[in-house]
Image (cartoon, rainbow, N blue to C red; front, side, top):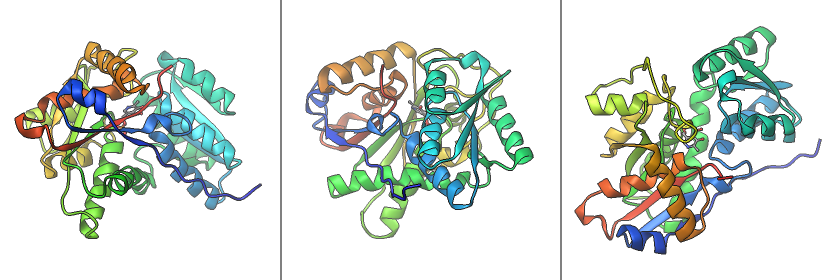
Length: 310
Ligand SMILES: Cc1ncc(COP(=O)(O)O)c(C=O)c1O
């Protein structure tokens, strides 16, 4: 097999027209949708695939609802690993066809996303596969892969922004982005931490519930309402919820819950004004701009967008 080092870097664009429409002079969009498989999950997939290959595994597995599975399948195949992806039966969508076309074995699981994750982890233990699931042995270390988002933003801007808005499901991306900004501050490369602001669905996300109730740890939810638009953000268990909640609080950020119709509107606005085509779930970050405050016009704000639209 050919040896190579793959490096990911997504564009940061100054959104002049969108900023004008939303009343901001310094709005930037970090478009993770332009990663090879269309989402920020490529960063963490690449970490786990490299690690699995380095440790001599021949098979890698995760439970997923779509973006992560498709991404893991793509990078696994590049490295010559076999991807086995567990997906809840009720989630059958175009991402499954994509996973199969990338060479994944897809196993449909009765139950929720969380059931798919548990089943994948259990099967990994039984068969000696590399476990790339949230909560697995190497998961926490893998979150470091999202630090790259912070480093790339600072490289481009030459300083830390005032606000960074991240769409949140499990809280993994937000946690890693925060760790990146904290590391940059500790190394003396930047002079401050940006406010880390989370957006998520108003139909059920445990991080939003914990934030609203002022809790110190993120509870599991019993009921959520999942739709075709909010699917990446809705969850009963947020696997990196506690660390995400801590990141939001430590940085002086907050959480905004967004209904589907607003996500769809913002994704259309991003497309029409900037030609950026991303999933409505991630365009939820633009709703947070309304909550940043009166004096934010000149502040530097970065909205993380992801999930390529179809
Ligand atoms: C498009 C999109 N936005 C946001 C998220 C949420 O990311 P996280 O689960 O890391 O919080 C995901 C997760 O897959 C996603 O696919």
